[in-house]
Length: 167
Image 1 (cartoon, rainbow, N blue to C red):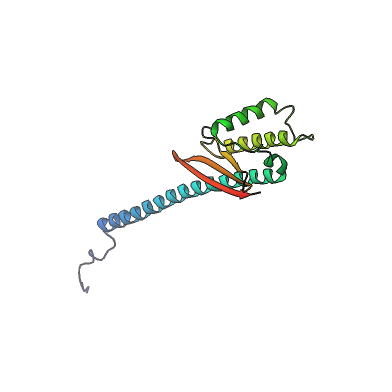
Image 2: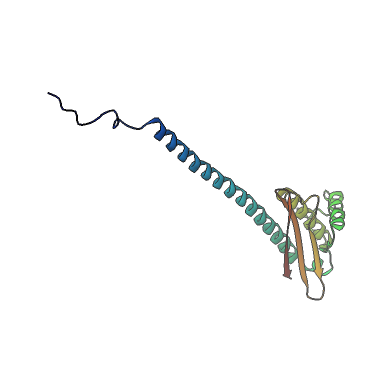
């Protein structure tokens, strides 16, 4: 003799509605995680570019410190973007001869042209948008301070940062 205590069909497992609700909840959670990952990558990219700008600025500061005579003679003074373009073209024309200071000794002014040319090439490689809006370097002769202004592009937005150092 069999005794039925209830309808076994009702306690047989998950229904299709329960499975669909679980999938929707899981999908919403995964979409939230994907959005968080995308935001994290964007902030990481912005942080990377700011770090590169800082590294490039300190590179030029070290170059100016090692050539103080040229710094005192305003050889590193590039106050405008047009002056920067002139400096880059001067470096380009003498790169293979008189201002190639890598393998031979050269004057302090040629070393400054070499340093600036190398530095501008580095900024063009590392910082997007710096080719069209060149960084500037100004020297205050009273305080003997150098100010480096670097501009770059992050997601089609112009960013800028300034570093001032006393040499």
